[in-house]
Length: 120
Image (cartoon, rainbow, N blue to C red; front, side, top):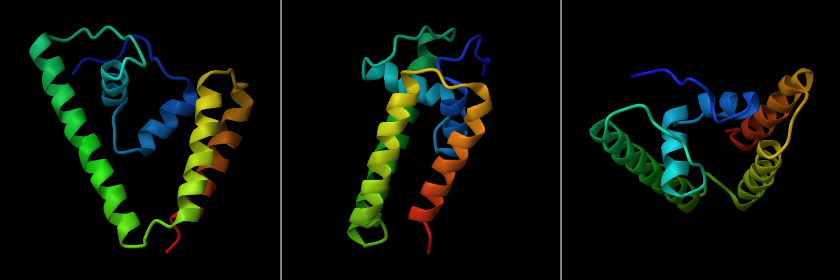
């Protein structure tokens, strides 16, 4: 798999992607398929559509996981509120510039909130 020439994501989003179930390429493909990002892929059509299929299946599995865990009471309404608020902040961060010296602080706060929501 070829490396990216230039990332479509800022440092904070790249760090969050690394902690997610998805790769940066898969996130790009999902955004591209949802018409949220126009990205050029330097891979063959066959490889691209194979990755589209893999990304779609991973996203379906992710949604089933959320449904399951929420249905079993593992993910509670308060957890969903925290996730929604953090997600909204990610949207703001994605649309703005963060000073590099503040990036670790932002990641630390997000990590703390996510881990707090996941406490067992």
